[in-house]
Image (cartoon, rainbow, N blue to C red; front, side):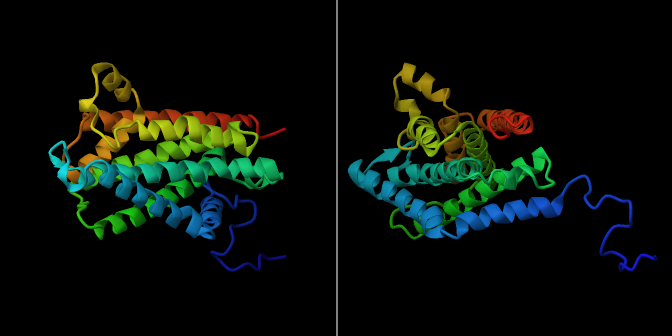
Length: 275
């Protein structure tokens, strides 16, 4: 019987319908993950943005308002970029740490493992969706800060904002994937949030310059990867940084490559996912 299919709609008989990259499958996973958090955008996008603005209001009032300067700039201008990228990173982690974990708890993990997606495609879909949420949160906070009296968040080095903003969100997205692979209940994910992500975020130089710390604590701060992300992102707005921006950019790239390889290896092995 002759082939009745119109040219271009389906591949010829005997040829694979999916090429080297399953673009339709990757798109479907990405759209699914974005729709999941966007259906509750009041909780996943706008609430984190409002929380970040509350940090700005409280710390600027409590620590001197417009009269205090750090690194030669008003205190509000100093902490604003750090608050933006901190909100981005925390929400990237929240998104990616939820996906596989809720699948394991609800017994729907097969929805991630059974479709014709390679390990790399699965990882890419989860990470890209988490970065998308981070960008939306960061953009919402930035727009609000543009209208905030006494705060100036005008970009001066776009490459630094993109590199450290997207790279920082990617770093936390990978960490979230690792958490969702390892965790067996929501308490485990909350423990990583409370004892790893939150302390590293708050002790990263967001609200102070590490140059003002004692030598021992300054050395400890330089071992915190969040410090380089926040300092580099701040450089994109203020042209000032308390770290070596080029070193921080290279370190962030190396960390993301290492985290990505680790996530790939664990997903490929099926550790704690395939029972």
